[in-house]
Each structure stands twice: as C-alpha cells, then as structure tokens.
Image 1 (cartoon, helix red, strand yellow):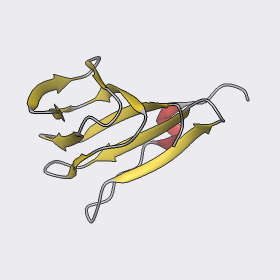
Image 2 (cartoon, helix red, strand yellow; image 1 turned 30 degrees about the horizontal axis):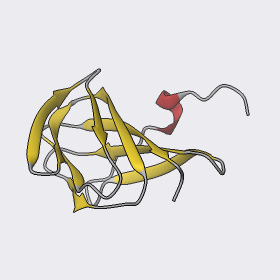
Image 3 (cartoon, rainbow, N blue to C red; image 1 turned 90 degrees about the vertical axis):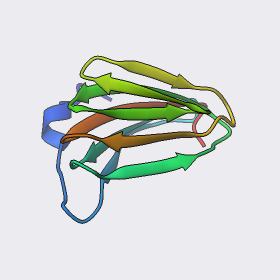
Length: 102
C-alpha cells in the first residue's frame, strides 16, 4: 500500500454522511467520515478501540457520557465497548482508526 491522499476521498452528501474505508488489514481499519452540518453518527458501541482525528470542520464527539467540542486537529479515543458518536456543527471530516478491525 502506498500513499493515500485524504483530499481525493473527501465527498459530501446532503442526504446522509459518507463513510469510506481507506485501509483495511487484520490488525486495523481506517475509515474516513464526511458529514454535512447537522449530520450525525449516533452513539454506538464496538468491540474495538476507536481513535478519531478531526481532519477539518467543527462539531462534537461523544464518548461514554461525555461530549467533547472538537475542531481540526482534535483527537478523541473511545475504548472497547464505550459508546461513541459524532455530530457536525459545520461541514466536518473525521478519520477513525479502529483497532483491532471489526
């Protein structure tokens, strides 16, 4: 696997947030999430740890019972089986690393 340009994969839809798997192996998965203002990934749990980095935009990331205001360059970690979700206050791009991959 070579270089990946995030910019080439950023796409938005007014209907629903867009998610794209950029990397997938037995050990980890990287997923790019593109959300328009007001779109949300409702809190949910997974068996994996999830590391979320805000590439651009502003919004909130909920982990457990805490809601974090985030903007570009923010990093938030959700532990295994800890509920997590994302809501965009403006057009927002988040790169999530899921370890181990589901």
